[in-house]
Figure 1 (tube, one colour):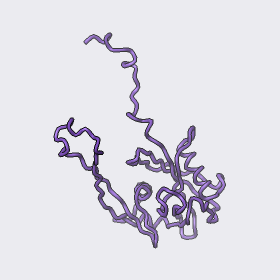
Figure 2 (cartoon, one colour):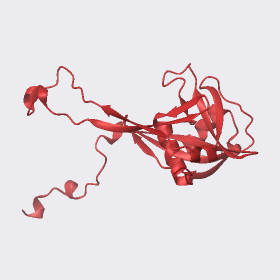
Figure 3 (cartoon, helix red, strand yellow):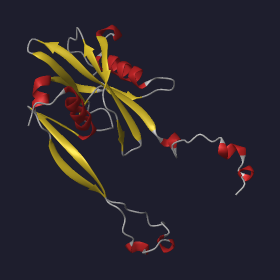
Figure 4 (cartoon, helix red, strand yellow):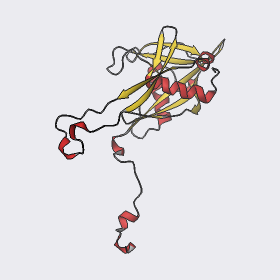
Length: 206
């Protein structure tokens, strides 16, 4: 084939993520607080007033606003949720990010939170608690596998695919991690982010 037959816009095309406009970005802060026994990680318990995952343990964070970088989002959301001054947050490093099944990128960032007195916004947070970093590094999370099945809707054109209604859809298997600290259970995306953070820091369990 003669290359002249290829349209210029095809030859010059820059690859993009298919359906990229449907992907969203969010960010969280992994707050470190210095106490007498060493560094602690701060967690929030989500308020029962909010529709999404009330009562779950999470890190401060939220959706990225237009023109805002993920690290700016993490800092802004922490200021709002913990009712602290921006000057109390000292950036340490990014942590490993994740793409959730809901087409949501979650970017975590580690901050040192200095001078914190336990404040939080009751509209978003039910309570806060801290866990010694050494305890996090020493605890190997429990791991469970969850299968997600494909369930086409009734108007799906089964007659157009080989196998029809008996088509063998692939089952997506995901790992769910669980941490337990006192009365608090940490699981889901927060547990996966925590585990990545702990492994990068240096876990001490065998």
